[in-house]
Image 1 (cartoon, helix red, strand yellow):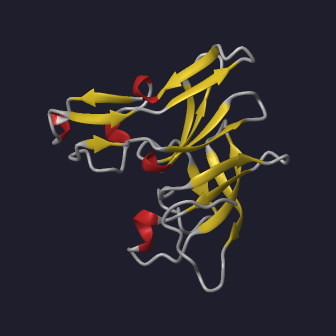
Image 2: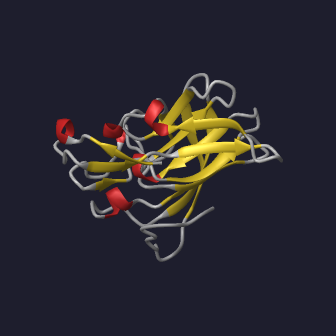
Image 3: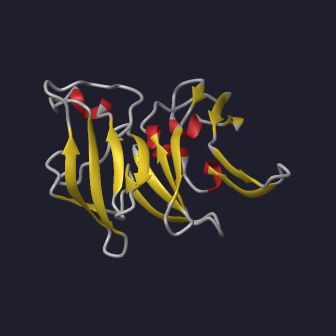
Length: 182
């Protein structure tokens, strides 16, 4: 949803435009039975994108997965975040990664000490309850981290922990600045 947005409060342009992310579920008759708009739930300042551009794609969703409990898992590249959305109410249930991360990462040296994903893709819930994510690493590779990687986490959604189960890498490391999956 491409909308005009007054960005001067955020150091941007008065005539900027923002891409909001809209998720819709349609029935067989193409009637909307569920709709979620990022503008109603996620502030534009949660992005890692510049807010000074004329066009701001602040969320950039790249994967949505129906979770085993019927709710939605959303991967948002420009938030460096996976968001769980209640499919009945549209409310955010939790945020994994990004500026408003609610989880503690355990056993992951890349994300230890309060780190977060970096422009990830491809959230998936596995049959064993774990999640996989493709960690592109855009924000951190320049700081000397190795390449992109696939990761599998055991999530404790009550105690808000994400424990690294395994990491999938190439040898030598390859950097995928955009796209990728596990």
